[in-house]
Image (tube, rainbow, N blue to C red; front, side):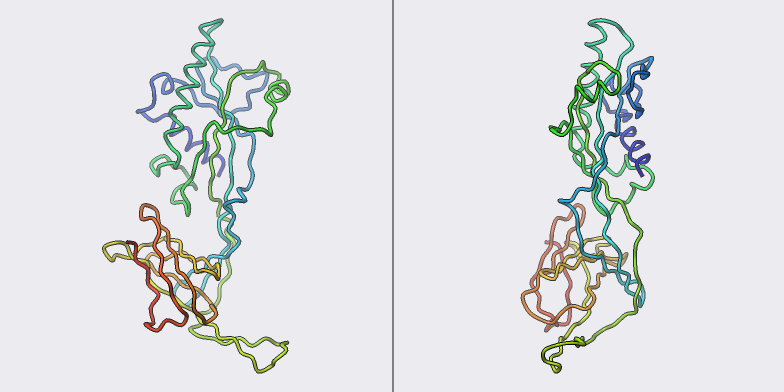
Length: 277
């Protein structure tokens, strides 16, 4: 997946609409150590850090209905990939510095145009993401000493900025279970053996403004904190939800914003559909 991210960034920098000097430069992802000396103008993007974005972490499983089977899968892992971006030129003296500064500024301006990476640039496994791939450019990085960094590489210090791309990594972990339309759970050990807790499976459609189904929309049931993704027909399912009032259904989809409605379970109308305003 990291190679796909490299290819995606290269696709962005190679866009025919990019500034001329940036478009003419090579795009390189090698470690810029003491042996790194490109023979022509080059934008180097060194992947120096990869870590989970815990702010975007979602611990709740995603539940989907496929035929008569429920599939429960682990939500995608949200990962921050941090690149150090530098510019290199083969000239000497003041001309070298001027060329590198101009190239670096063009890379900064161009990459800042894409807070969300457009689908036309996405390569390999990054295509059709469950979440948009976000970018942040030139953030302060107080955890990194640039002097020590360049000293370790055996290179004189040079200007740089960081590019952080947050990608969604599918863990391919899922479980299957049979369709259950209604069930009652009774704890094996309880203070009152006669106490029974009603639970029910609910489902509905997510619709756009014109009433058409919306596939791949994310639906959350609060305060149960359950998450589901609509299938190709715009349907979602939540399994074994406690009966009660005060629930809220929320749906999000790319380009449509958020839809919400208050419900009780079971619904007096028998439906749990959501429509974007």
